[in-house]
Image (tube, rainbow, N blue to C red; front, side):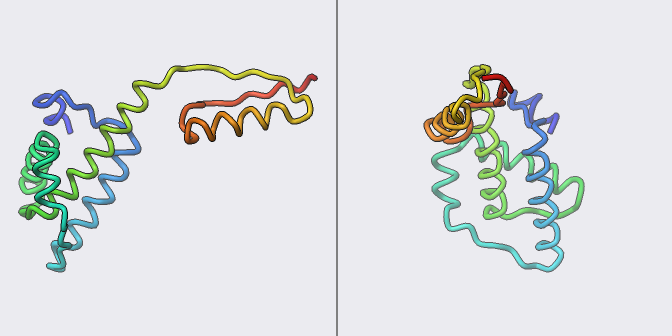
Length: 136
């Protein structure tokens, strides 16, 4: 992952990405040992629409080959591209998030109603924490 950061200036140190990618890589290695690869019908679309991320995935597949001796085909590289793309989108969303605290009294369930409304209007992602006062 440090190679990707050094060469492409893309930070992949996010714990959630790391866990998902580690699971994917483990399953990929199991599939390779069993010679049971999955076709990815979106390979050409992914390669054309996300060339930089695909290039990063090719580099990661080279690192996997160095560490394991397993050469990944373009289908597996495209799946890695999807993981990277998801991680980059998550990072973009987090970078655009404005930290805020919503503080309101527990008066006639106003707190719950306001929190529910906020989650719905922001697809559940914008509010990092919700704190209720016991007074009111």
